[in-house]
Picture (cartoon, rainbow, N blue to C red):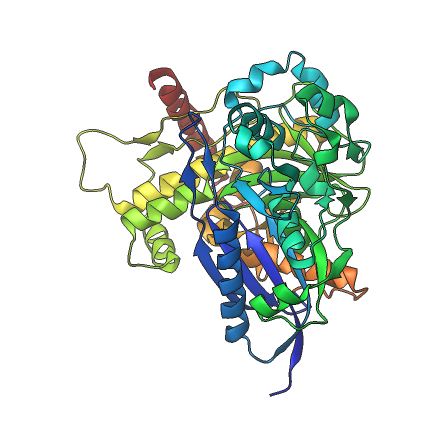
Length: 482
């Protein structure tokens, strides 16, 4: 069989690590994945970490597995993307000390060190909290002196992959946006912010643009991963930004990225923030473009875990069949999704249904309630984006594994009154976006992916409005009682 050109895309998510072999046209040839192993750090109330060496072993194994599943390819480039806000600390000998994922909140005890949070929001485009990297560093400095003394630099997880592949330390712009140390409008590290957090600027690597060649693969990494010696390493970016790229959007488009969490973003060409400080603003992987974001929080992960409870041995197709066979909406859910503007998140949730339990309550009722919770949370965050930046288009792009559900797409279309457009292959959006990133670095034109599936609002819009009000009452109930 004739060999074909391909790219390797390494994607480090919150739950698992994935390595995909992707064609230049964005079609995914193979994927290998494994769960990331996190450890609790008992020195803090809410801290998790991963061992970088263990993760790199997983990446090495997964790359070899993915390449074995696509044997007739010539790898021209390799790139990486990862969960945002996660970082890896490295010492002056190049040893990776500790990995801090986005779900690590070891800095929460020091959040009140910021007296003027509005000033930080003005520079960073996000309300400061322990989710972001600067607070993780403060937590290490204050309680892990052994690591702090060895620290030479830190970088995002995707940029750490680049470092492992090339030996070059850098920090890509979209990832730097998540640190609270980066002036998003000026596209530069901020002396004011590093001073505020007491972070030595020498710990900050040089900034780098996505879709540029970082360097060749070093021999040690090429041998370990099974890559050709002449493959180049392309700077990637945040997983949300690469997923966005897969939809091939235009300026002023809104995109729903449905993964573990559900960012809802609008692409703008000026640094745009919210007077009420409800949104995030980041650099996009495309030059001179910003990503204005409201995030519905953990949504897709809820759906995945509840599927494992109610449909452990069936596929998502069975769920869709059962949803189509019944329109029972007697069950409503509130499962901890996030609404932009809420000061405190919901930490308790559950399902509400008529008592006593009737025979009409089936497993599909719980899944339907979960999908409605996701759809309504997206709608609430859409309202915030609309209020901040407007939206005149009659469509919204969507990508990510969660949007494979036709039922969910229909719910969203009906409640926001817009077409939902999904490109073919959208379930592997970060991998596809990675391929387009490699094309850009190699000065190759990216062809448009295949067909676009469009879901339009239908006759159920009026019914959805009633369910929307009921969902709000359910959410308010959990907030008052939990």
